[in-house]
Image (cartoon, rainbow, N blue to C red; front, side, top):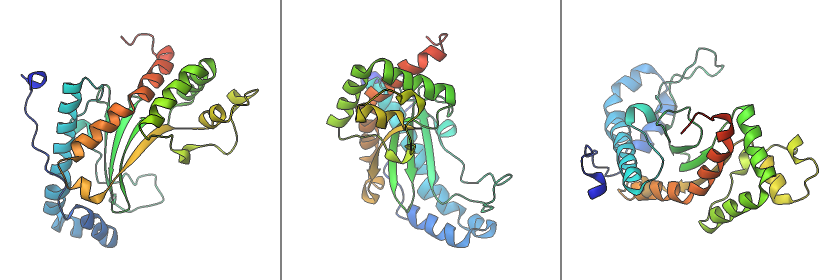
Length: 240
């Protein structure tokens, strides 16, 4: 408790509402403003309010544990309205809810924790998503330049049951892999996003235990965050 003294107490997270996932299934079927406005109260009570409480609770727990992830409901939560200005898909609403926490709390800060709530599968993920070309090059250089350190980091992830998500892998190795024969290094260099994740069962998202599950993932993935932040530090010499 002493680590939280002086901090505003977050709203108690008791779990997402029973109708949170069914709401998104129904929204996908109706997908119009009239239906959404008629059911806005359900979205607010079973999705938005619990998600806000989850972010506040995870943020407070990270502070207490000294974990470098921050976020508020205002900074972390994504809007349910889709930006359709330049999209071929003109559906007005997303059929999932998502939120991001980072070191600074800003969504565009590299090295993030992402929470995803959807009828098609809920999960939490940690890592470096959709890096800019210069950031990805710096990350790859860190792998090539210090393969032992990379393998030690990867071993810690493996001990926690985590592995890089292969969906972000290129079909062919990038130029940084030229001359490298080790399969584990080549596989890592092919990744466009370096992310680990854990599924969140539907029963878990309706439970207060979700807070511990999310902060545990952050703690387990900290070696990846530390490795990536060190790799990207060459691009941000002014960061203290």
